[in-house]
Length: 286
Ligand code: G3H
Ligand code: ZN
Image 1 (tube, helix red, strand yellow):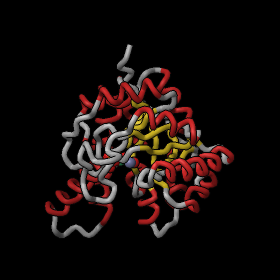
Image 2 (tube, rainbow, N blue to C red; image 1 turned 60 degrees about the horizontal axis):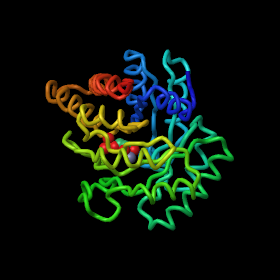
Image 3 (cartoon, helix red, strand yellow; image 1 turned 60 degrees about the vertical axis):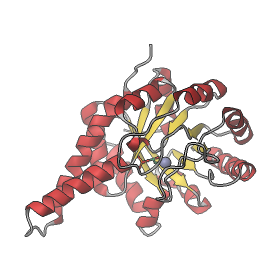
Image 4 (tube, rainbow, N blue to C red; image 1 turned 90 degrees about the vertical axis):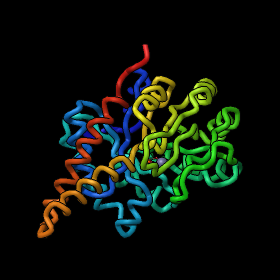
């Protein structure tokens, strides 16, 4: 069934686990992620980024309809989340399209401006019944320029500032910069677990890990044990899908039916999401 993101995250926190949030771009992504979650027997979040909406001509409705209609008959709980939203128009469309949560991204702004924009977005989201996630400190790699150096300004979330940010904005969850970076094609990110512990101790909202594709399994497990409650994954699915499509096309140069290579791509997403889901969901803490 279609459920609310906030409920999935709350339940994950209660059992010291986390919920996986996969970025979906095409119909095949949606079908594959739901199929993988059903096989794994775990809840899942389908998240649509502002970039994905832009790719579809700034139309949220078609992808949202596909997501809602895939979630409803699912044998596991599925929630819909709008990811990395920067534009107010898109934010305000979320509730009408079946989304129960949004990530409002003003992390690129100086602190005071991030607070002001996030506070306004949160007030609106709450009035519409939406759960809102924001970001403080910058998880790098959003602009394709690779990870921020560890000591670059904003590359790490400072616990004291994070505490103030949560108090001043009223957000429901916080994306923190602890060493991961977006769009990594290698899985060799090392997380700052001491910083995660300090953030966990300073804050009483669920913490979200972005750029999780570059984080190896053992680091992911440790992060979940350390208090990460939502794990965002996009690039890992892109890598798997693209490799499968490429191999399929290379294997048969006469292929013209998109269904043949899209099926290969969809199968690769099922496999990759299926491998990650138990790692992320596991209640690994005592
Ligand atoms: O919000 C989306 C995630 O942070 C995905 O990052 O594509 O590097 O896995 P990723
Ligand atoms: Zn992200």
